[in-house]
Amino acid sequence: MKPKVFVSRIIPDQGLELVRQACDAEIWQDEMPPPHEVLLEKIRDKVGLLSLLTDRTDAALLDANPQLRVVSNMAVGYDNIDIKAATERGVPVGNTPGVLTEATADFAFALLMASARNIVQGADYVRAGKWKTWGPKLLLGADLAGATLGLIGFGRIGQAVAQRARGFNMRILYNDLRRVPEAEKTIGASFVDLDTLLKESDFVSIHTDLNAQSRHLFNAATFAKMKRGAILINTARGPIVDQTALYDALRNGHLRAAALDVTDPEPLPMDNPLHTLQNCLIAPHIASATDNTRGKMAEMAARNLIAGINGERLPTCVNPEVYDRK
Ligand code: GLV
Image 1 (cartoon, rainbow, N blue to C red):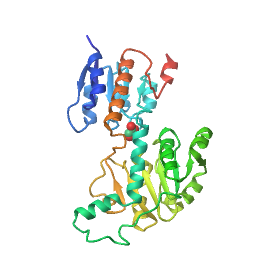
Image 2: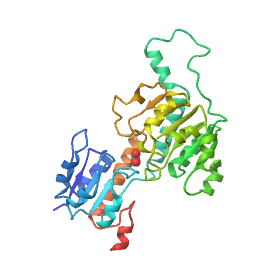
Image 3: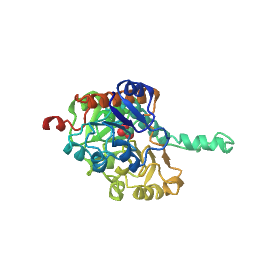
Image 4: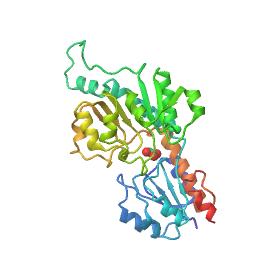
């Protein structure tokens, strides 16, 4: 008999086929994620969970089935999972680092360019029939060449964004908990403290994970330190930005624009005032959404799941301490 697992949405075939071959898989068919209480029920007779970032995997869920051998999250981020609780219970948690770096960096850069050059506003203007003539002052944007890009977080994705920025002749600053001297040299980026980055950057792009320190890292005080007319890009996690403070900074013109692929919550309710601002571009958390990348993420998540149910070390495990305990 194949081991029973729960897959919390229909993921790309590249992963689903591997799961189906190795497991007796129950696959949640709805477009919407399973409600938490349904997930608690579903997990009771399963030994593995392939989750998405929309699934809250907390102590209650882990306790719903002490036989659970693995949680494999199809995402690089794992703030939806209580890692401490998983580790305490000896459950390894997998994620999908690396394979989504380029797609996510592409999208961050696309948001940067779209907000710098009013691409969405331009398309809306044309579609609304407002385009009468070439206008010498129509939809003027901001230059990239010579501008300063400040990266919050200089891991895989931050560095990949820096590589793109280099091709656009931007000056690159970064702030991170640790310096990356090798990448500083090869990419041409300078480490600075956070205040300097905020003060000097024309564009600030967020590439850190969500944790206690980064939650609301961008708040009213942070925005006040940013250069007047700067543009904020967030492809990391919504709660890193205090959205009320962002609204004020955009509304009063201190920031020129923001482009967000992530919000808090997701989706952002339609009565959120950010939706009323022309200078706030919001995308539905699609930075890693390419055929190729989502296929690779699904495959990686499947391999983590299968390793976990077989009692093998996960290829990419976020809490390897579980193996030390055994
Ligand atoms: C997407 O946000 C991810 O963490 O993979």
